[in-house]
Length: 572
Image 1 (cartoon, rainbow, N blue to C red):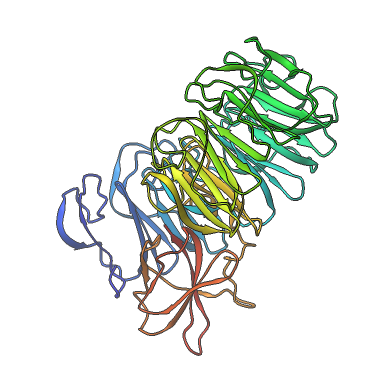
Image 2 (image 1 turned 120 degrees about the horizontal axis):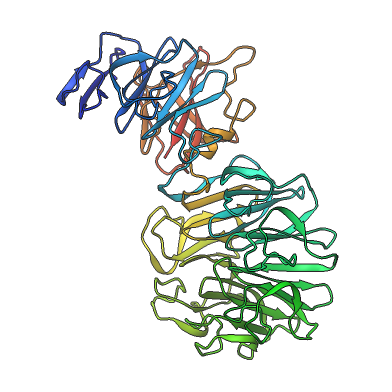
C-alpha cells in the first residue's frame, strides 16, 4: 500500500493472487484497480485478502479450499484474479491469511474464520506446526498453579481446584469429550477439588483433596488401575481408598504413594518399571515391597524407569536402564528398587525418557542417563550411569527434564535451559542446541514442565506460558491469544461512551517495527500488553517492537487534542 491508499502487487501470479486481472507473473509493481481506500492487506501462499477504509473485505487468488470466503458450498479449484467483495459486512477490522484458510476480526470484537479445517484451524482456534522459540502466554488467566505435559497433551491445575487440559485426545487422555484434539484449555468436568495430577504417554491420573485417585485415557496396559484394559474418556475413580498423597505416570504405567508411606504400582511391567521383582503387568494398584517410608516418586510420560525418595533422604530407582538412567553405575535393568549411592540429602527427583535429574538439600543439581544431545548439561554427550553434579552452583531450586532437553530455576528466579532445541524448546529465542546450562532470558518461573519438543511453565504471578513445538494444540502466539481475548479483555478497544477510532499499522503481524503510513510524523505512540501495561512508547512514523514477547498487543496513537487512534497488533 502507498500513503495515498492505492494497492500494488508483483511476483508469482499463477492463481491470480496479484489481483491485476491476469495470471501472468509480474516483475515490477502493478496497481490493483483504481481504488484509493485500501487500509490493510494480507497475503499467504496463493491467496490475498484486503480491507478498505469503509470496513469492507475483499479477496482474490486461489480458492481450492474456500479460502476466499466467497460462500461456495463446495469450493472448486477455480481462482479469482481480481478483488471480489466478501459478503456485504462493513465492520471488518483486521485480517490474517494462512496457506488455505483465513481469519478476521470485526469491530464488535467477534472472530471469524474460513477455509480448510484439516487441523481445526477454522474451529475454536488455529494450530501452528511451526516452532515457537520464545515463551508465549496462554490466555490471560492468573490462577494457574501446576502444569504437566504428556507426549502430546497437557494438563494444568488452577488455584480454584479446577483441572484443564488440551492437545491430543486420541485415547481420551484429556477427559470429558470425544474430539481427537482440543486446541485450547478446556475444563475437565466440573469438579473444583483437584489437588495434583500426573500425565503419562496418553493417560492422565489425578488426586482430589479427599485423597481419592482418578484416572482416564488409554488403558491398554492397565495403567489406569481400574481392573480392565478399556480406555476411559472420563475421570474414573480407582478403588475406594482415600489416602493417596502422591502419584506419577510413566509411559504406560502408574506409581503412587499412600499416606502410610506404602508404594503402589500398576500397568506395563516389561522392563521392571513396576518394581515388583517380576516382569508381569498389573491391572490394579499393587503394593511394592513392604516398606512404609516412601515419600516421593517420579517418572516421566516417556519413561520406563522410576526414581523414589524415602523419608530418610535416600534415593532409590528401578526399571529400564539402557543408558544408565537408573543411576546404579550399571546399564542393567532393575526389576526391584535399588539404593543409589549413599547420600541422605536428596530433596526432589525427576525423570523423562532415559534421563534423570535430582536436587539435594544443599542446592546442588545432579544428572545421569542418556546424553546424546547434551541434555545432561555437563558439556559432553557422554551418558552417565551414576549421578554427577552439574557445575558448582548451589542455588538450584527446581529442575524438569523433557525429551532431550532440561529446564531449571535458581534461587534468584532466573531460568536456565540446555539440551536439544530444534523446536525452540529451550525458550532462548533460537533453535540451537546447548550442552551446558544457558540462561533463557526469563525470570519469575514458579513451576516448570517439559515434554517432547516443547515446554510449559507457570510464573509467580499465576500466568501460564508455553514454548517450543506448536503442534497438536500446544498454543502459539498466532492461535491462542487471538482466540480467547474477546470483547471483555484488556485489548477490547474502548473510549468512554463511544468506540475509539481505528488506525492503520503495517506490517501486522510485525517482527521488528511497525509503521503508520497515513499519519504525520512525531505523533506519540504507546504499545500495551494484554493486561493493559505499557510496554513500549515512541513516535510516528515508526515504533520498534523488537524484543517484545510474541503475542497480541494494543497500539494507541495519541494525536494532541484528538481522541486516541487504536488498533490490535500481533508481534511474531
